[in-house]
Image (cartoon, rainbow, N blue to C red; front, side):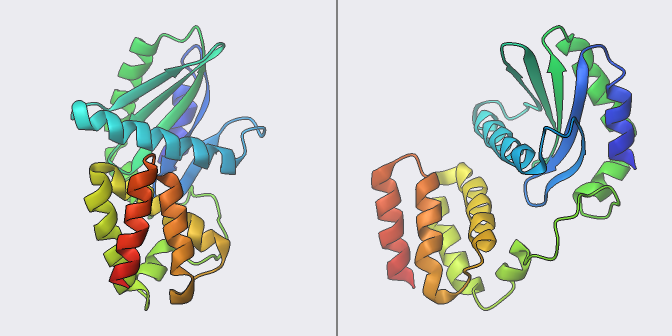
Length: 211
């Protein structure tokens, strides 16, 4: 129960209200926050934080911590690895420097357990039902066209492509409409995540030519 222990211990730090663990592929794995913070909202928050982290890594390869300051609260995120994050919600009076040191020490202490958690070998995960997983889709008959789409996205977007691809795939699977005949819907989801309209159009056109 490493994730529970970590957040419980960090909540003893003045100003820490609670937190959650987020995995880019598996979503929220554990949360210790008021019930007003729904898992769906935390998943959205985690995705946005992971995008910020990836963008910052382009210019600052050694960055691990991200702090976001709001009017009455502070959100501090620590990357355990490229996929796995600890996110803490704090009040505005928290000592972020002291907290950052505490986070580093406690994560080092539980390093082996967190490695297992990131790999899915844990008991803290929140149940997400029996929906089809992205990996099941990637291992199925759609594998070849999906790989072509992914390669094209990397050519268009570079390092941010992986995040956009994974998030878009999750949305497409959640829609319940999976198949070769509805691949254009997947392309539309990806295109909607691309900030440049011209690139989005070029991406869709190039992918249709590949299929």
